[in-house]
Amino acid sequence: MRCPFCGNIDTQVKDSRPAEDHVSIRRRRFCPACGGRFTTYERVQLRDLVVIKSSGRREDFDRDKLERSIRISMQKRPVDPERIDQMISGIVRRLESMGETDISSKVIGEIVMEALARIDTVAYVRFASVYKNFQAADDFDKFVSELRPDTAPDE
Image (tube, rainbow, N blue to C red; front, side, top):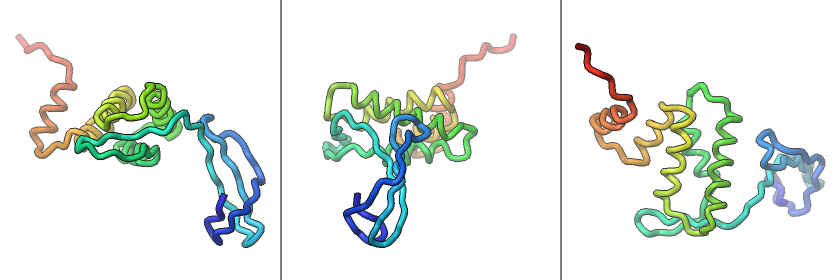
């Protein structure tokens, strides 16, 4: 592993342990050239996934990009960070176990929305506003009204 401080490629692992999410390994590393210490995380990757965008463009799946978009939708929500990590790991496992290496961005978006809907409605609406490209307040109103259970009119 290359040292992020000096670029030395010969770093040493000083400590390894499971990370809090129990799906990755946390490694503390030391660089003998500059004395720098840093942490890396190692995850199991079942297969290399390729995302097919709606424009037809293809790009490698990026777990960090998925995590960033989910964390943005979950900002300031009363959800335990460990719960968010578990959700992200579950989404990635589900994508990897689909059996396909090419996955459309639409499928990924639907899976994320399904997971968010189970955890936090506000985060679900936030994510949907970007994913479904809401253009006006009416788009929010229509989407939120679909979430509300039908209420019987007062008689």
